[in-house]
Length: 88
Image (cartoon, rainbow, N blue to C red; front, side, top):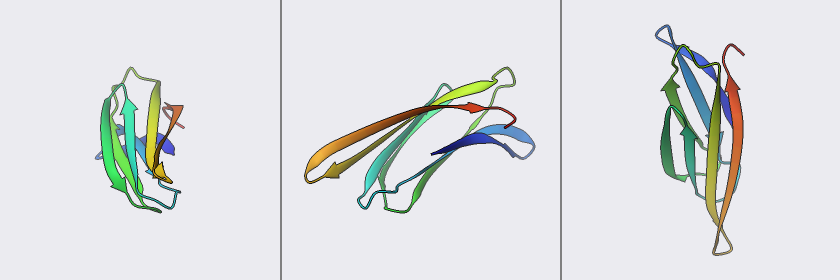
């Protein structure tokens, strides 16, 4: 997972990219105080990407990513939380 500040058309955004490193389709949910988005059936080797406009008063933004896939017929869910820091 990569979460960092990017500028689009001169405005700051939080850009989040999640790579499916598994060998099966996965559902990926990106959740931040700025918004949430779910991507269904992300292919192996493909990425889910979302950019959220940043408010000027925000210095660090918590990002929670939930990754769900089937392994041997059983649903497996992993979650990772990081903070994206502005200006880094």
